[in-house]
Length: 142
Image (cartoon, rainbow, N blue to C red; front, side):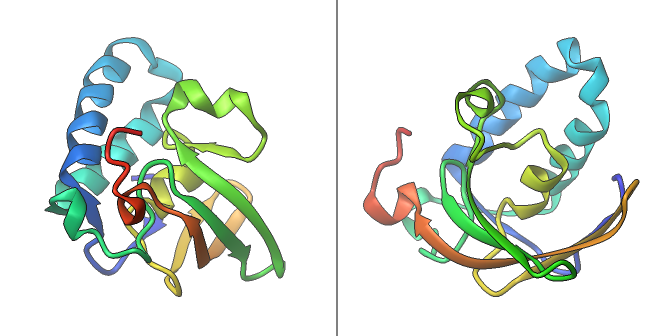
């Protein structure tokens, strides 16, 4: 992993898990320049607790979740939506699961702080709130 420090298991829906596993198979063949993020995501999936979509708590970051994050050290907050790589370019607020931060927040809950060492130094990001989560509204096909 590229320095992401995580001390507890994260929760991922079975549907997200299957989609991400399939995406990783393709990405390993074609996305050589993003191999570190691919490896980070693969490690997350290996250590995650996998549950049915209807068992995901509404405060957990899943794919297509719109979330407010805060950089704890800088005190800056913003909204973003965790998306698959092809959707990341559609909006500045879309955060690819293949990005360092995208892989870091998947499966974490409101109130959690994720810490890792990046080339820019230590990062501490807090999950502040979830504005929209597909599982909470039973939209499992997003």
